[in-house]
Length: 41
Image (cartoon, rainbow, N blue to C red; front, side, top):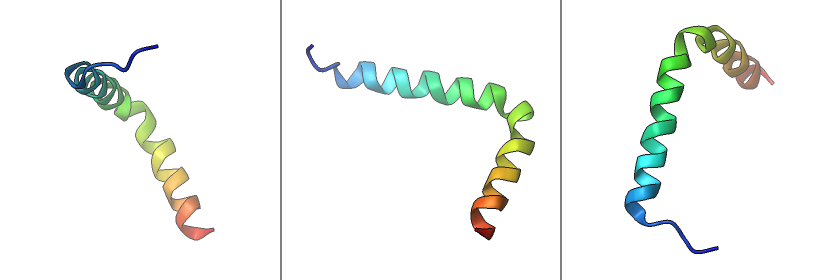
């Protein structure tokens, strides 16, 4: 298995970042709850 070029890794990270941003409205409450729980414990 050869390593992916840097450009490919950047495109992949941008792709996942966009997917995360798209799903933020539905995940924001869960993420807020999890971050609060993590901060408390």
